[in-house]
Each structure stands twice: as structure tokens, then as C-alpha cells.
Image 1 (cartoon, helix red, strand yellow):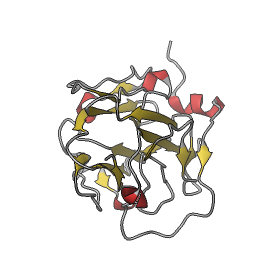
Image 2 (spheres, rainbow, N blue to C red):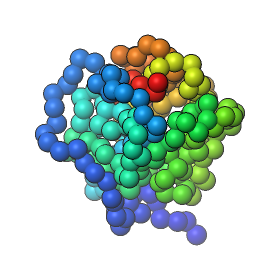
Image 3 (cartoon, rainbow, N blue to C red):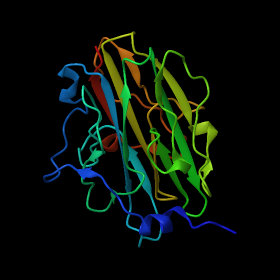
Image 4 (spheres, one colour):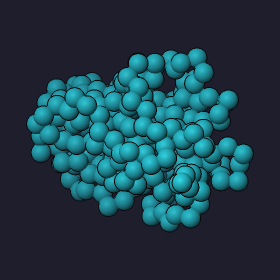
Amino acid sequence: MRLAPRSALLAAAALSVTALAGPAPAAVPSAVDGASQAAAGRYLNLHQCVYSSPLGRPTFDLLTTLVPSLDQRFAAATDVSDTPVPSAVCGPGDGRFELNVYTAAEPYDLTSGRYLNLHQCMFWSDFDSDHLTTVVGTTDVKFVAGTNVSDTRDTAVSCGGGGTDHPIPLLSSVTPLDLTAGRYLNLHQCMYYFDGFDDHITTFGPSGDGRFKAGTNISDTPDTQPSCGQGDGRYQFVPILSGVKALRIH
């Protein structure tokens, strides 16, 4: 017996997130954020903001952000702080896309190990012809990602089973980031779009084949522009929905 598709489950689900107030600001020339100058803190608070297109549309589409998009409408409040976050803080969307139940936040204690193991989990829905990317472990159990801080470098990506959706090993990955290697965590967000499926996909680390690679790294230099792969010929890079945030960790 086939389980209900993702889009049907979302229609009945409740959501508890905080939206950033105010109108959508104009596009800015760079995606780097003032947080690059903020003092370092104990916790990396990853805000996973997942937006969905209205359920009444002929096709269903999800997109994920961890950092503000270049136009700021799909902002995510990922930061480094001495306070762990209780819930996700996200932008309002663009009037067409709105927040949904896969939105979540998780604090990672940067003092608990040498490596930030960033797990990127990509899922595909045959029913919706749609991808979903997750990085945190506090969302729907079917779509959790195993991101953690540890003294051990993870070598295999850890993802939920996806339910009726299929995990995609080629587009999933784990990136072990040595927290002692520099002052900044440069978190890169790369967004792609294929009009044939009306579908966005997001990456934050290297995909298995490199075509959707995102340049997330640890460095003494704050990155100011996202570094992204060129896509696969169908899915095209979308600069205005991509971004980078330089986060002080030392």
C-alpha cells in the first residue's frame, strides 16, 4: 500500500517556526553577512529553512536554505552564539513559496570535538517530481541528516530512509570540516533549478559527482561569494537564491 505523498502530508501538518519580520529588502551586491565580524561563540546554530510552493499548483516544489539568499527573501538565521537556539528563524519567502514542516534548527557545540561533520541528505519524490535537501537531525525522522561535532572525521553520509521518497547517494555527502584550521566557517549555499520539473535543489557541500558542489570550508579568510558547481545541463545554477555566510568560530 502506497503511503501518502509528501505534498499531501504537508497539507495537514502543523508548523512551529519564527519568521523574520518586515518587508523583503532589495537585492544586495554580496551574500556575505555581518555575522562574519561577530564574536565567536560556543554553538553553531544551523537554521534549516525549507520553503514549499502552494499545494494547489500543478507541481510541488521544495527549496532549502541555511544562509540568506542573495535577495534576502529566503533568509536563514544560521549563526555562532553562546546560546543554543530553540527554533528556526527564517525569511518570509517571496509570496509564492512559504515555510513548511521540514523547517528546523539544531545547535552544535563547537567545543565538543575537532570536526564539524556536515551531512547533506538529498531525497527524491517520484510522486511530486521533487528534491528535498536536509542537513539537521531535528526534522521529520524520515529526512534527518547526521550532522555532528566530533573528534572523528565521518567518512559516510548518514540520512533518514525517506519513506516513499528515495535517498539519492550521488547527491548526498558528508564534509568533515577541521574546526582548528581557521577562524571562519564559510558556509556556501548553491541553488539549482530545472523548469522541466519546476524543481529546485540545494547543496551545501560537494555532491558525489561534483556537478552540484558547494564550497563550504574552514579558513582564516571570510568568503564573500558562493562557490558552486555548474549543474548537470538540466539543473541550472540560480545565483539570486544562492549565498555564503562567513561565521566566526575563533
